[in-house]
Image (tube, rainbow, N blue to C red):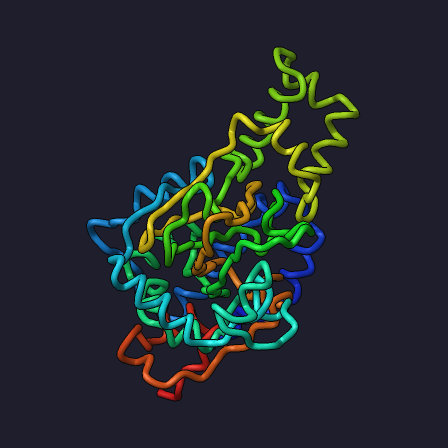
Length: 343
């Protein structure tokens, strides 16, 4: 089986993914992970077996509540170097490049007049340290155990959130679910401080799995009533559908009313990172006191729906051989973002 033969199934998987709600995607995930795992065995990928897994606690938290506590990933000086690197490059007025107007702007000039500023994939891959962190062997090993198969790194992004007078609703700053894949997660790295007034992330703990979400919702809607009885209520059935299909932009007030007790606010210092299951309800608060610069790397099972939405094409990049592994397994993990040189 060739490296990309597994990707021949992607079209059928995406059709199923697109027609599935939150619970159905979760139920399908083990089957697809097993198919990828079988492919990896046939392809001869080396099994990742690293002792002293420094990410085990973070992935346990991810499994249990849907996100992890911030963890130290780089020194402040390195984070500051990355900030300077991006300030010297053009950014584009959306939280991802393909949603922008395609006009490159500079921070400190016109870029700050928009709510967001994002960067090209080529500039992100060329940035100091980010590609290496996204390919940390310990992190990839923990990712493989969490997903149940060799991960596909399908998205990398770096973007600013600027304090503006913009009065419209920026969708990532309203509560929603993402539905990129059957199972996936995001690594976020703070490149400057993320404080209460500088765009903190918020997550509704427990809404990332069907069982926990269902139990929390039942307790919120009909406290003290037997679950079987609640589940038969037509109003409850309608509410479940509203909160599990698509991105679920139902209004922040409704989410806070139902899940306010489960709401967690994540603040983190420059150089720290955390992992999130974006299937659970989450949002980023608009910054007030200063601009926030963040990086994400997203890992899933295959070339999923998000790869089609974001229209990302792998970039040819010189010099990556000295930064990450270039063996067959690494080429597979990074295949959607990097067009590796032959060899």
